[in-house]
Amino acid sequence: MRHQVGGRRLSRSTGARQALFKSLLTELFRNERIETTEAKAKAVRSQAEKLISCARRGDLASRRAVYAALSSEDVAKKLVEEIAPDYKNRSGYTRLYKLGPRHGDNAPMVLLELVDVEKADAKA
Image (tube, rainbow, N blue to C red; front, top):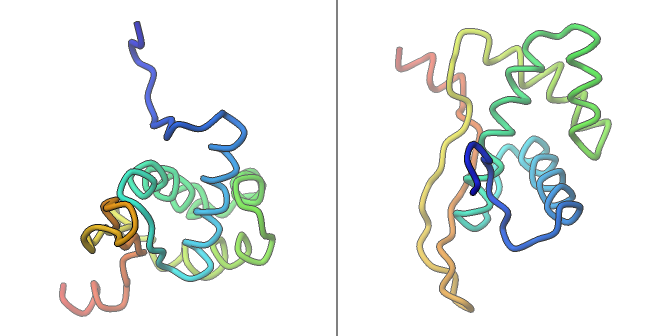
């Protein structure tokens, strides 16, 4: 039985899945939006939210955790110094837009993006 075993396996081995998530997270924070399948986006979304919450603290331990979770030091620095401070007074950081099926295999595609803080503050 799989009681309290969370997460999506995505038909991959552990190492391949971890590498996939690391690269998706790195590209999400580099470009602030990625287009991917719905299953991958939903799996990565919770990790992205946790990384931003960790980066918001800004202490040495949280910086090291962010650097370990991403594959690029430049992107990790951008997350800690530019992205995370914008989300100080906010609870949700990401959004999913459904784009429809992919042409080749009919997989449901989504746009996973970081919520724009400036626009959100202007509406409030």
